[in-house]
Image (tube, rainbow, N blue to C red; front, side, top):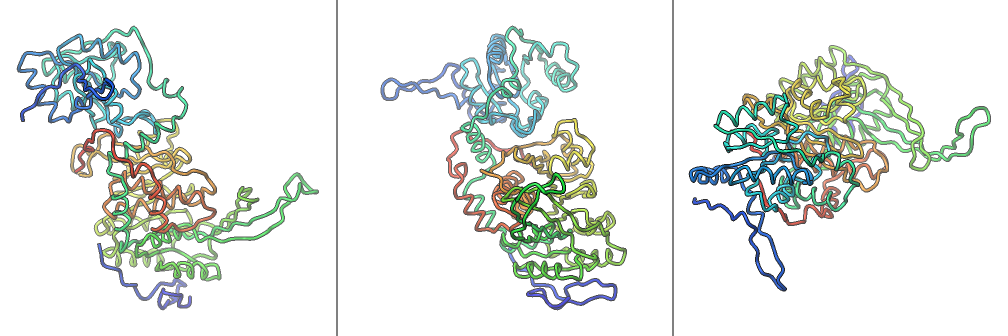
Length: 581
């Protein structure tokens, strides 16, 4: 292969493999507590308007423990209720009124958004607004948002005299409830079951409610405020992309779009007769992930398998022009191609050309040598297994331990039926679709939270972003990032983002854009939820364009500048996210 653009001199090995013989220089860089009155406090305003100061009932755990200790010392009976309270309906009101009558003080603890496992789009109401709804009730004295998936830890901390549950728990053998009951009784308290004269289901009510755009915007704004996602934080993360050193490993794919005019039904058979108008080519697969990273500001290196043909040389030219350093193993007889036939923007047919050509032992050893030699240079490595042979199980077994020891952020994704997410052990981020996630574990029945938990347990990976197509994505996180902590194996925290796209032109490459942006965000010290937000934004930009095209840093900034939720001042009480080790 000849010298190409900025790639430097290329040498052809006797085995037919080509590698760049020089390395591009990396850029450097990188008290006294008082109980609030149980009755609402009113303030006169204008023409006798009344305002209720109920938000002060929403307190943090340490403050609440101190308050309850004072009331306990005075001999008052403390009652606690716990639940999701996604929509406060008449059944909840009767339940809470009953609970308040059992003692002198009613504390309501509710499960935080990240710990709720009732589907990817639940809770319907963000935790801040759920807390406000409860605090606005006259018979509720205090409200606390609990980050844990069960009430066990908060019961241990608050030690209520009475814990009230619904009548449906009276004969329940659910292990979580039995554990809660045991904790209450071990602290000298008791469990009482409320009468069930009015029964509603929040889940059924939510399922019957049509989409409320105003509520969706309010929920998104609350999630952004909670995770410090605003114009300042997103701009800072994008600034930090500059100078990141990113390695990408995976199959290069040439995506061909053949635009046609539909003439008629063919005479010889019941099939469309098309007239070709033009053809466009897009460099995809692992190459588009590398192109995204370079366009976003990172110094990017790509290791892949190409062929000794004109298509491969064209790919090398595109990558060179966009600042991607390429190390190519010439192991393929021809470049993998996926040809799509379109009429206007409607795809009619896809034809794939290219087979799985796994690395031979010599090529694999050379690829391993290159990655291990450069591992200390990388801030992040992205592994893209499209199932055409560049990423093999034996290559991962060779390089992952070295990469894990030297690279701060490692992310991975698969596409197609040949790749397996289970190969990527101890990585920081995986970004599968829901179908890929379920296919990996052959689990098509259980809830997504359970399937995500099983994948992270089997791979010991840290984070997971699962895309849901037009329904957006769910980000799954561990309670702690300390692998030695007993909390490492606890149930996952999760947050859902609906799709940000206004219209869908072409879904090709949306996952690649998300993977690149989310990985760079984590390398730039963003939190998982911040990374998921920015990845979702990149996916929205990509889906509104035809073909696999790189997203630049400026495109991201322009898109973010128009987002209302990033400019909106928080209107709900701030609360610290669960502490992660």
